[in-house]
Length: 317
Figure 1 (cartoon, helix red, strand yellow):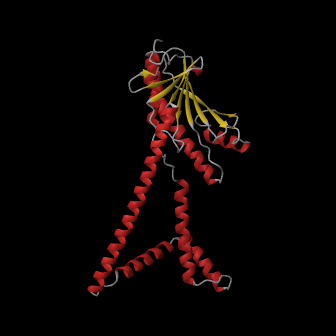
Figure 2: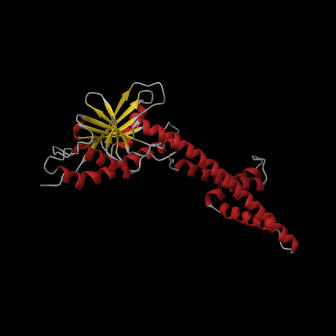
Figure 3: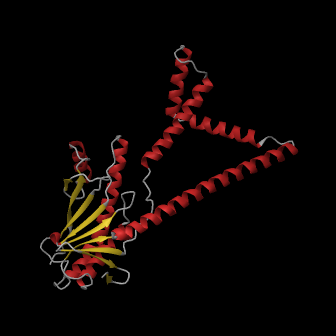
């Protein structure tokens, strides 16, 4: 029998306040190579928009969720599990690429709160919370396998339709602790930067004093000369050089009231600033804190929920 190849469709469930025709077109353009993207809207809530991206797994008519079905476990471990890791990576990467393009075009970014994995035609939904950067470690796709295992072991009870990772209570604890740790890191980084600046200033002052004592050339002047040489080298770039030449010609014609020194300095500074802007534009965002997925909320067909501790495999009473 030929080895089945999983595929997926994508459902983007978005806050109605965010969706217009331009956004739909951009989503179709950016996400279509991953799977057919379908955009659905939901009514706006009271708070910030909360969006979900759903991966709907398709493996034909083969059973892969229920371990009692012949070949289901082999199909999962041999094919679906690794495929999920790759697809989570692809979706997570595409969300960040999409937002980078939105920034480039001066448009609002599209952030998702949840990544859902729909299994077996909707018989089970695994709902994973994304971090503050709209990201998730692809290795965390293993939690889908752990949910499937717990379901088949009967650890989650009967009538399970969805599992949310982490539970709201667990995420709230992580959020408070994570932001506190983030604030502490920022304070530590600022203190380290100030200490490094002070150390550099002290070292420069010490070198200056030593130079004066031994009638050596001032290190500050040497540094200035090195910086000037560096700027001259940067100015040799053909694009910068052409712009400088154009400005110098304009100054000679009286169209630009600047000295040659001012023209060169401003053009070099402009190029340096442009480089910083490009780095900022293409930098990928970092999460405020990583999310742990070991505390779950199990959702049942009758609408009830129970929390589950995956570290010890126990349902809350």
